[in-house]
Length: 269
Image (cartoon, rainbow, N blue to C red; front, top):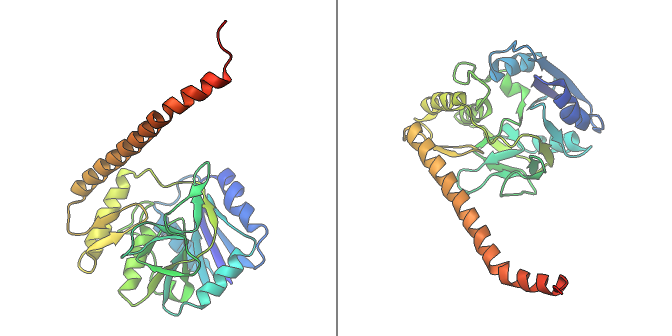
């Protein structure tokens, strides 16, 4: 059985997304909610560690309130995949491989929904880390290693940190080829994201030259401020290139459009 653990701060979003998709699942599951509507928990790691300690399932599925499982057989299929992975540390639905460009996922996100990554898969694939939107951990492993409440003191990177931690014990991280929807695109990064990132880099820099996340690839030997600056420059360049392509395409089509309009519109008397 899978235990589903979710910390939430908005019942409307929870009911519209996660609960709705759980309503028609073919497999039984345990459901553990942690209410944070009044900011009872200081961080995600604290809340989810509490939920994980209460869970009785063989696997613990930590999930965001705005996630939707993509089919009625989602939990059933996930269970089969998990049993086939003997070195399983963490399994997710969106992850970043070390030696391949792009995010690996079958998820859609945002409004309107669009593919959340560049790489779609048809079987479990190893990655360095998976996104916090959904992560599955064997309970036998979680009993030994919990989320790091000190390093991940806010609501970011607690699964990334966990993937890197269990890797040192010989466990692997996988992306499962399962469909789903995430309301959030994860585009906004708060100041606390970067403070947490600093902690995670400090913790793992002796064994990792790079930390591959679905947001960005962070170099552990380079100052974070420099990387943030370069990331922002790259983003601006990409936006400029996209605008340039749009303008060039418009110019290319301008004359044919004028000719077409001249044929379709009535001539002046």
